[in-house]
Image 1 (cartoon, rainbow, N blue to C red):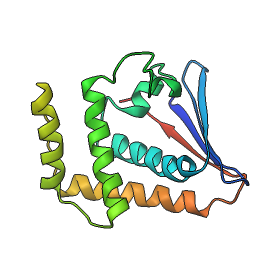
Image 2: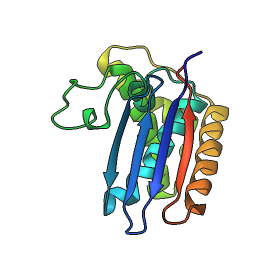
Image 3: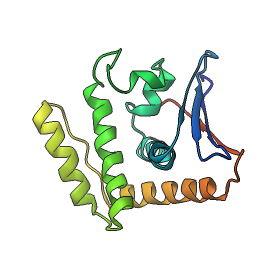
Length: 165
C-alpha cells in the first residue's frame, strides 16, 4: 500500500492560512492564503477531504494532488489543462456543500443528484447517485473536521492523511 498523501492546514497569527501536501514520493506542494481566501479555502479544502473520503471518489482535488498535481495547477492559467471531467464531479459535490454552508439551507440527496446529473449529462459521462446516508456521512465528516479546525489556535495546524482510492 502506498503512503497516503499528508495534508497540513495551518492557521497563522496574522490571519493567513497555508495548505501543504506531501505525496508518497516525498514531493510537496503548498500555498498560502490571506484575507477572504484565508477565510474560505480551509473549509473548502476540508469539504473536499470529507467528500472525497466519505464518498470514496477516485478523482477530485486530493486524488489529483496525490498523483502529482501542484496546488498552482488548480487555476488560471491551468498549466496542466482543465480538470478531468471526473474531478469536476467532485467539484460539483463540494460546491453543493459549500452552498449549504454559505446559505444555512440544507439540500437533499435528490438536490445533490440533480446537480451531479446535470453536469454529467452535459459532458456525456456517467453520473453517480447518492442517497441520504451518503449526504449525512459527508456532513458528519465535514462537521468533525470543522470542529477540529475551529479548535486550533494561531500557529497550530490540522494534519490529515488521505488514502488514494
